[in-house]
Image 1 (cartoon, rainbow, N blue to C red):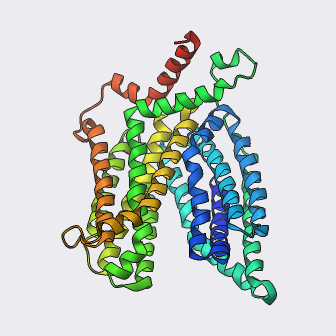
Image 2: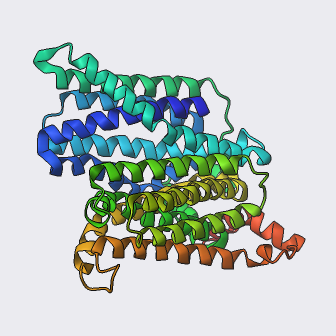
Image 3: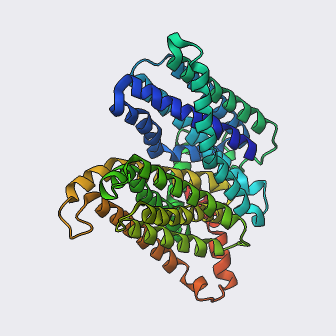
Length: 438
């Protein structure tokens, strides 16, 4: 599973650079936004992927999604307008959102509870740590393209898209060799073999209701969403922050991105080395959010690029740790039969938060510019401060949720069973209600 994700992530990064180059050639700076929106927008409908993950064979769901993405990415070789670029980007992300819940729902079935943190850390490091390798791959593709002077840009992009298609096929073939547990469909849903259009809708409602009802799951999902909402503003406003607020130019923006990426990677690796299990996930998750929020707030008020880089490094450190702990907590606490829908809800909320951050950060910064006391009279600084406060409040809410654990109080066996078995009990109750017609 790790090799599958690493190979496809590497191809994705190479293709992302090629897609941005293609969008820039078609529509300039404005055109670059088109494929990015095409990648973010499907997240709003990502809950459907959870229904697929909990209803169908997860292994073949991933294989078909990989092969489908490999075929679709080749269409980028013949794109000549922004509408086609948007539609292909949208379709690629739809298949990704079908694959992701199936993958995440399978992880606890192939590693032990003690290995969850390590497995999630290594998976996320491979997903994001392949970024520099993808950059090198794009540089190599560009160099090879220069050997064809008449169409060097086109040749470079097409080589990148072809490489991405190959990595998807390799990923699918790797997963096809695995033996994975098939989700158990409740007996009540197996009795009638006639196709019922209501069944997927009932599955979707069950997953949404579970996430809304169970506070431990809800707090983790909202915490990860707010972390990305606050962090998204840093990514979107990083360049104007470096150029206008820190007077560090574009090179300063590179320093901030390097600090953020290094912090995220190190945060994931650090938590992988810790002996964390059970409900301690939630304590470390809450602490990581608080660190992220405070560091983002401090970033907004510093005046040197290296000072900002230090705080941004802590932002990444906290965000990386929170991401791993959030995934591990959901893997452990959510029952297999509803795990795909829970992760689909996570991806939906997180993508929506990131999309909102990208859409609102610039407009809010412009609206606040000059309306607050120094140093927040700069709109960019004000938005960064707001993002940090949002993440901090989310961390404090998470602390409140696990306050008994932090005090060192021992949970009663009944309470522990309630938390760890909540999803399974909830699913049984929902199925009983559906059967009784209530």
